[in-house]
Amino acid sequence: MTEGAYTSNITVAEHHALRAVGFAPVGLVMGNYVFNLRDTTTSGTCGYTQPDAGDRLFRPASVVAPVVRAAPEMRVAAHDAHERAVNHMRQECRALGGDGVVAVELTTRPFPFGGTEFLAVGTAVRATGAVRSPEPFLSDLSGQDFAKLIEAGWVPCGLVIGLAVVLRHDDSNPLIPRRWRDNAEIRGYTELAQAARTAARDQIRHEVVRLGGAGVVARAVSLKLSLQLCRMPQRAGHDRLAEAIVVGTAITPFRHGGPGTPPLPVMRLR
Amino acid sequence: MDSSGAELSAEAMARLNELKPGKPGAIFTSDMSVNEFLLVRHAGFRPLGMVLGTSVYQVGLQLGRWSRNQELDKLSQAMYHARELAMARMQTEADVLGADGIVAVRLKVERKEWASDIAEFVAIGTAVKAESGGQWRNHRNQPFTSDLSGQDFWTLLQTGYTPVGMVMGTCVYHVAHRTVGNVVSSIGRNTELTQYTQALYNARELAMQRMRKEAEDLRAEGIVGVQLSQLNHTWGSHTTEFFAIGTAVRPIRDDHTIPDPYFVLGLDA
Image (cartoon, rainbow over all chains, first blue to last red; front, side, top):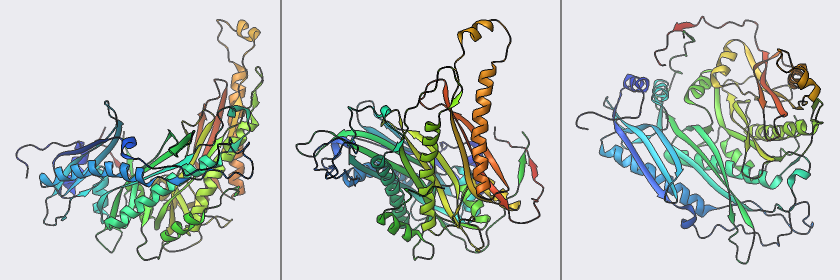
């Protein structure tokens, strides 16, 4: 238990919602981790051994196009960084005697002295009733959303982060301005984007299974692209990197039976 | 909808098959908020999984005549085709899951750092299946799509309508520049710039008409939740895209009533 006043990053309405379903805030908790993705990875090659013969328009038919590959080392490194930040937060929550953390906000930002900082901030809560969870649960849901879930018979079982990094050797030809060309889908890039997003979605699914959830409500799906020098030996050119992230909260039903209270249609007077 | 390019890799198929309901340990992924999730459940649907489709597209070059109002059909086509590719891929994924529909679809154009004329068109939604069965798919036996939020979806079903599909229309239009004579003659006067007005009218009308045509093809009764946006991509100040998107609906029963709403005074700002 905390001594004296608690701190939190929740609004008055969120606070009220939490209290209404039998939870009380115990304090603001956070965790961060600064790391450099480039330093942590040595491999992550594109695997493309064909000569750079320009892109699809000028490539002879005999030369195969580069394929999209997963970059598992990078994925693990990036995921690990998120995980560490979140774990710090979980430890803080445990130290405060909390049962879980709500309203978790994950931010990724460049650190002024180089590298990237992952920051997780949330409010630790404690159940006022007798039922306790053995391990603190984490959730990026607002206080209201949390309350609505509990009312409807669902409980959050953890914050899940689906993260995937894929890369593909870049075969675009910088000498030819694209503007001169026609409408066309760029298959290579589509494959890259699709692979990253799909892999992130699969990853989040694995995470949910690991946590024993029945499903996930996700909020943010984002795709970040970057260009890096190709790391294949004796090789010029660049690789295109795509990093997709899906963040959500895994949930599981704790009450079986009816669908709970039906929604009440309301009209706001304001 | 054009289904070319809607093929899925064997890998993707295998993973989607894992998500099919009835498999042991099948869990759902969703791209819904808690409100949406609870309301979709209450409406009698079960989320199956997050489905997505993407297309990275290079938009070609077409210049408008300096002093003429005209549609840039090549650009219109690009915006249309790319969105359709993304939507078709998403629908294919939902079809594999055996879904009845896709709700809360978000169709976005994301300009990436690739190059100024390349954009990623992405469609993301949550595939759902009715708990009690019934005919929910559209007349082409494809899962319905809807860009309505879970809240709107619930309300729609309560009032006796069901979505049949997302419909869209687009028109990239070049607005004529004013001639010197025109500019000079109107200096200091209150006057309508009829050429501009006409251009915006035409472009909007074309976009709306195309959307309506899609809805008719889906045998819908009407379109709800239409958003008409004017998007200025990277084409300069006189070329804009008018984009209309909405959800086509059809009635499923004769009475269209919902319980009287309660009036509430929100205490949050």
